[in-house]
Length: 210
Image (spheres, rainbow, N blue to C red):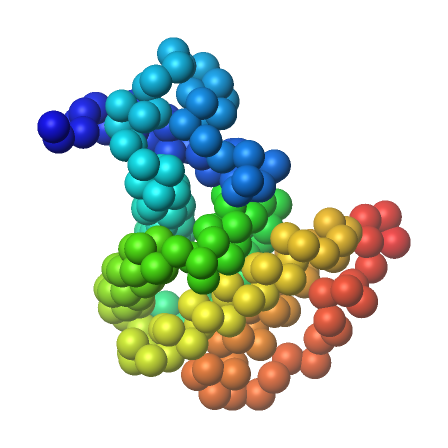
């Protein structure tokens, strides 16, 4: 029997799974806990996702969807061909949003990443999502008029992921617009070439009110 095709309900369940993963961890994730978090009758999640692995894969796919949509929305604010400085500004702004407003979402990603080292099926699904994200990001760079190669885009994505992990697991005071922009400039100039900015580490940035 095919799973239900109510995409709004599937997204609601996947969003609830992301909230659980990012707040209390993967060991608390179950069909029942997802139903409760989503405020739906017991049995709803299992009706859409027969196995727990299916629920994990749906959560990963939902994060990838939201991430790509967010980056695309930010890119649409750019008028005309972009340059490396504008790319750094875009990455810095999205790094800031990811580490603050969407912190739970990306903590869920790291929970899934660790679990994927133990579940080959999940690892395969996340690898496919990574390839899809790479393709969509390369397309976004082309739309912005950037000549970045797929290898350079992959390097930027890898640096973004590692930097975001440091931010979401570190002190919140270190996450400032100045810090994320400095980090993004290092990423872009390191991958695309150019002089490194003479800026301090995010952990050396003064906190609010200083």
